[in-house]
Image (cartoon, rainbow, N blue to C red):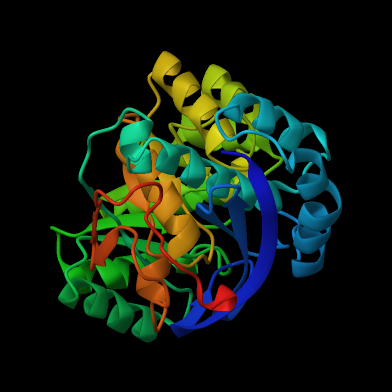
Length: 360
């Protein structure tokens, strides 16, 4: 099975409600879809969201990276030589993690299809179900409370609460949500780099003093401030999850070795795909660090690839894969089944996506 053709398309899917964080506000998924066709007619799908504020990738840069650099370097290569393809993929340009991720997952899709196995089984996994949280966007407190109650009514037992713009006032919004949903719902707090280290310690300790029972706080400080992240982790009882601070296996190793965070959030758009994410999983196993699998604002194609990775790796114990649940529609046949908070893996070969509307 050889790589014969690499094509790009675009998908636009409106969100049910605007997605608001400390970094941005988004109304729709507007992503690049990759389709790789092999010489036997098999196809693999991948996806790249232009998340410039986090990865630096725009639609234009994603297209340029794939069309001008990645595609010419791997066309004609054999899917069975996946490690050699990945070496070419990573060596043809630096950074550009989102386009690399889109091509990488399409390659893994084809690699598993060549074995006639779902990807999670081809990777050695056996988990059939995952449970994801649902995101509560950063809004006025009453609106966040209403959104939290709606998520619980939809069956979600884990809420990911976006904060990071108003310092200590964030404690009030989290407290209001805790009062509304009760003690049995798990709350994760995501500051998206919105606090300083000193603010982080004050805010997290305030939540601890009020017994809000927060499962974890995600990326409280700027991505590059590993020293500040370490200071927060060492001075609070609530577990800290590193997200934007972790792109590469080297980033993960540094944070794990220094214990700058308790957990690590793996996102394919940061790692550049499944190949490098597997390296991070192996490091996490060595250091005894649990991982979350997360996503940007992505649709079912790339979220399904992330779900397969999570189903294959026991060290991934938490999932933040609510992207498809935030979309008004699902235009893709096949793939894992998204049933509220539960993601059910199927036996479809590869990632399971059978078609993308932009190629019909």
